[in-house]
Structures are given as C-alpha cells and as structure tokens.
Image (tube, rainbow, N blue to C red; front, side, top):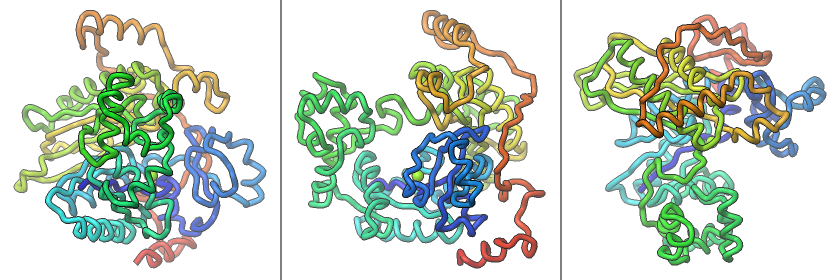
Length: 433
Ligand SMILES: [Mg+2]
C-alpha cells in the first residue's frame, strides 16, 4: 500500500497554528510582493474568491476586516514541511516528499486494517505535534492514493482517512465521478483529446485497452490506466509534464560535511533543475534546498534540514536559482554533520507564457531568455555540462514586499512567540493538546 499525506490548505494552516484567532475565518496567503492570492482557506473559497485574484482587488474587504490576507512566509512553511517529513520518517519505514505539503509513505507488508489504523494515527499525531490538519489517502498505487486523498478531503464521512483497494465499489463509484483531467498526470490538453475519443472519466480511462492507449497517446497514459486499475507502475518522477515541481538530487560518493563540496553538488543540481524548468516552459517562484544525513548510520548525528527561498518574481534564470541555492545552503549547513545526499527542488511553478501575459505578476525583469536558450542549446549539442555557471558571488539585494507577513515563529529567535504578550499565545499552546 502507498499512503499520501497531504496537508489541508497548507500555507493557511501553517499560519493558523500560530494565530489561532484566524481559525474559522476567511484567510488568504499572497504571492511574493503581495501580488495575488496563492492559498485560500475553505472560508475564503466559500466566498468565491478564485486563486490568482490580485490582492489590490480585495483591499476593501481586507480593510473592513471581512477577510484576512497575509504575505507569504516561506520560511515558516518550509520549516513546518521539514517537521512534517521528520515526523513521518519517525513513524514510517519509507517516506518520499512529493511537494512542500504532500508526502508519500510506502507501507509494504501492512494489511489494509493496519494501513488504515496507521493513517488515523499519523493524522492525529500530526495534528497534535504540529497543529496541522492533514488528510490521508491509501491505495495500491500513487495515482489511486492521490484520488483517495482527494476523497478524504471532500467527504467528511471518511474523517480524513480514505483507503481504496482498487477493486471495491467505492473505487468504481469514485472513478466514475472523476473527470479524466483530474487523474494524476493527465493535463488539460490531454483531457480534451481524450474527450474526443469518448474518454471522459477516470473510469473510462481505466477500462481502455492499454495497448491502444500506448499507440494513440503515450506510454505514460497507458501506465496511468494501469495505475487506476490498482497495478503499480509509476515511478515518482515519471509523471507526464508539466510537472508541478522539479527536483534534482543525488547521493554523494563519499559523505561530506564540507561546505564547498556540498555547494558544488547543489550548484550542479540547480543548473539541471533550471534546464528542466526551461524545457517545460515554466517559471519558478521558490527554490528549496535540502540535505540528508545517512539515516541508516545510527552511530552518526542525524539532520534532515531544508530551506525555502522565495524569488522576488517568477524566474527560469539559472543565475537566480543558483543564488537562492547558496542562500538556502548557508541557512542550513552545519559542518558537524556528514551529509549523504543533497538536492534542489523548484516549487510553485507557473507557465512562462501565461505569466508573461498575465497582469497578476510583476513584469519579469531578470530573464535573459537568449542567454539561457544559448546555454541550453550548446549543452544539448555538445553534451550536458559543456557550459556551466561559475560561482555567483553577488549577495542578492532582494527586498521583498511582504507587508503582512507573520513571524517566522519556528526559525528565528527574535520572532518566537511570547507567552503573555500575545493574545493568541496561551491559546496556541493549549488548544492543540
Ligand atoms: Mg495540500
């Protein structure tokens, strides 16, 4: 069985952990520079305020106190995400983070009852230790686990944990009600093409002949159909593009604590990520750096930190990403640990063309499309890494506008919550137990 743990309205939920007075209120989190809405609480969704709404349009509502808008606080979200991963690692044998708030856990050899019980236990523990509401989807494949999680979120009857075995009536009913475009890895355009062929729901896709699918569409789609039947055949990174996040990571040949060595590895990963990003014509809004020590070496100190660096405007420029990677590494690197693995993840991707046309985003100043295209072209023709970027040294003088950012409660000494001076402080400590 595969479990998918996914936080509900993650950014908003992180804010509510430390500001419980926001519980039950319509809350939105804004993009960098307070541009537009990128996360909404259920209450804000209920007001029909769509994702991407420019913040200035909501200024009236905000000033009247009808809604609460916060600047994004990626440092807080990144740290809460690291804590969530750590909590899962403590409880499960195998954990694979998929995005900032989605983690897969692999439960081989567990019975369905044990899986369900573990799901409930994890959900409770995450709520209790981190204050975060999550839902758990359990199924034999990634694709079904994703749908199970969705169902757990939608239908209160499941109380946050939904298990689909792939063959039961629930699976069938769910798939018949799921538009094919909502299945994992089936994009908008592909869904339109499928509709022409009479494939409208996830169930229709599941019932298709996989040989035909492979011939008429792609191997990936054939795999999706198999996954919907409950046959696992999807690697974590094999999902058809455009990906929602891009990750490159690798283990070191020899564990190391030396900053320059770790930095060098990360620089390579960053450049590879940037290439992949441009290949799928996306821009990234945030860069995550993560490090792992060797968890099998019980005799060594363990440390699994990550750092999330938001960009002032969406970018696909290798130099911008490299610079964020260095900032991130400086935040989390501690020489006393022997690192086994290092990686870079690009998060909150947006479509480059849409982004340029859209008024929702700042004009993108720092793109040098010709330079980047030339580098990519040379590397494609002459082999990967033929040209690469040297050390970037300029400290970024990025001043983000974030007028409504909450404190970085979990990562800055001077921004810790103080008992007694903050009206929500005592409540925050007691309401979660
Ligand atoms: Mg989520």
